[in-house]
Image (cartoon, rainbow, N blue to C red; front, side, top):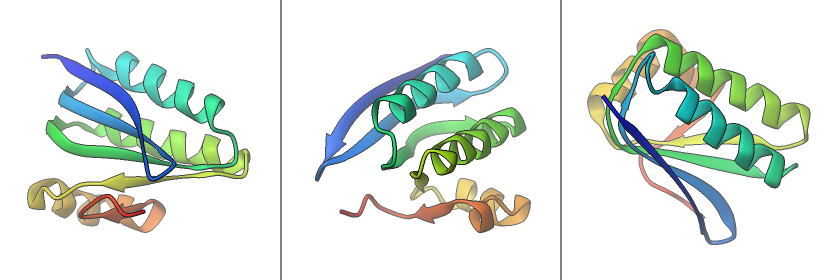
Length: 108
């Protein structure tokens, strides 16, 4: 499995666009991308776009929670963008959507 993490800006907000699968083998890619963006944009809200993700395991959920915690300690935050109903259901089941804002689309 593979994961691609690209960073862009939309309406002045840093966005990490993920494509592929988030699993044990690809977690370092996710960690590095999120860590880099949080350091480069302290105090800002970072969006993580999961619309290109076809699988997200529990380790990936933990990485997202950890990234949100790091961003919040620096005065920022992390929001998730995900239109996939299956993943959104998983976020509700695990409570991730109570810890991190999840939007169906990227908002300004």
